[in-house]
Length: 321
Image (cartoon, rainbow, N blue to C red):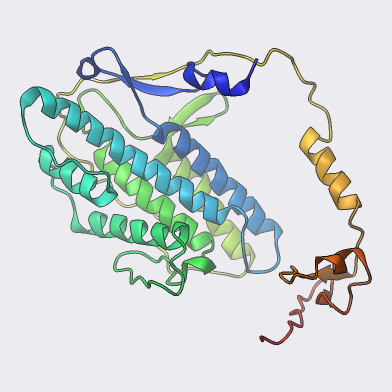
């Protein structure tokens, strides 16, 4: 039995829309899963922020920004695909495109939706910021943001950029949530064996937690952390769709005991133990070809700095050559 063979089967948690427009086929809407992933990645980022003393790289911020963007793009793409399917029946034209902003414009034109210029500007800023990170445009392209507080240096992103991404996403979700008849498109987030609207949980959990952590660390922000007042589209377009989230699917043939530590952590500990280090020093990354120095007396080849329990000490970096 091969794991890859199950990618053609219906899986637990899979989300699809059913509609007469698809001739019996199902339209996956990935924004359900990616919104859940982004929400809990943001919780991980807040936990990491609370537990670290230095202002620096948060392991969860960059992938969190990516997940919020993925959820946003999937949300727009789902609406766009429904418009394309409907246009095939009505002979109405709609621009064929793969680009996020063009889909945004095509949706608004097709459904005659009045959309605030500020929302479009925020989405464009989000697209530019995401591209700066994931296409690694550092030193090759610079952005200027008109309606957001994204970092002008995307490689230095932090929790502000994560929450700016979240706020743009939720604003867009709110705008189109009632676009279709008898349907609420606000992503549903799993919590305590049930689901709740994303915007409600953002206001109940993420925003107050972020504010508390900022205050506890003696920090503040110019980012407006309140969700914008609802500007939902007043339309309710007569496209009948039904969301289905599968609750059943294939299971692994063998039950693996939930041991502690986990299997992955066991291998991590083994690798870590094979690399002993003076607990009072921190060794910096070695991007030279002298990798053998790691296995020998490397104190003179690889820069280190003294660890201190309370005061961070800047490492003595070698001069640039």
